[in-house]
Length: 116
Image (cartoon, rainbow, N blue to C red):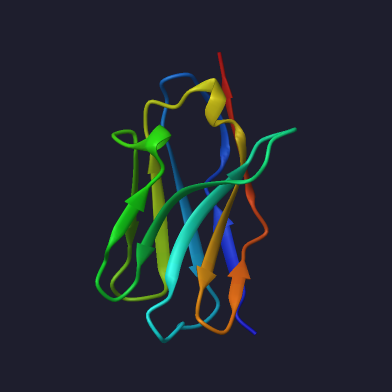
């Protein structure tokens, strides 16, 4: 059973930066789609960014374009979300996920809080 672990969340002021990390417990084959989602209090979960592992195809939600960058490591099953110019509205629990045709795995989430 694959497990995902996020880290890097925390409290930051408006305009600040954080880097989230998601690491899988083992290598995930079959070109998984690695994603970041977030869930703010009282709101539905929303897509943030994704990267297709093998070819590196990247997609972003409109509200993070130009501010967030998703990337992946080369040596292990780790990927990142670099978040810059953070806004209060970015406050949420951020989850990483790995999707395959036959399964989907989620991390436990990491809290990001942006203060005004």
